Amino acid sequence: MPDLPDDPLIRSAQDGDIAAFGSLVDRHQTLVRGWLRVRLGDWATADDLAQEVFVTAFKRIRTYAGDAPFPAWLTGIARNHWRNHLRKHQAEAVGGTDDLSALIDADPLLRQRDEGHLVDALRACLEPLGGPARELLEQRYVVGRTVRELAASSGRGYSALTMQLHRLREVLAACISERVERDGAPT
Image (tube, rainbow, N blue to C red; front, side):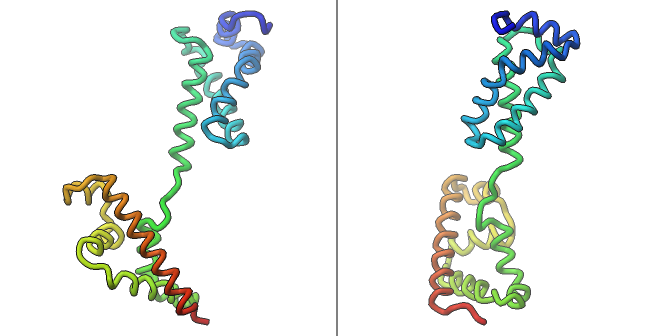
């Protein structure tokens, strides 16, 4: 069967022949798994997604019209699964709204856990920041405005604000680390 073109197997699979679809999987699983592995860098996840790709392909085999080569059709399904996977597993930025707000708002809780020194250090590090930098941090992390909202209201670019917030978080993190190291943690 490996020497035959895909078309007869596709037609049989479209008519409900599970063995024919299994042959298509055997022929194209290396392509699909490889395509996903290159993009994910994680073989186990790529293999899991490849299985999902073939389940989707099996469910939709009757919709395959032959407009594009079968491997391209499978790769399109793989691309959709890959994008969905990336959306589901997007990394959340460290020091985002929730993290900073929690440090500011959870002072009593943190003190109960002997971590109030972090909040004190954060407040001390915020004090010398003035003007636009402090206002930007307050608008983003206390008020909760999105970077897009801040960009629109200030007339500044989204990327520029993102970079400024990143740099401010780095400055605050370094300041907090220095203070905690210098002052020590309460016991």
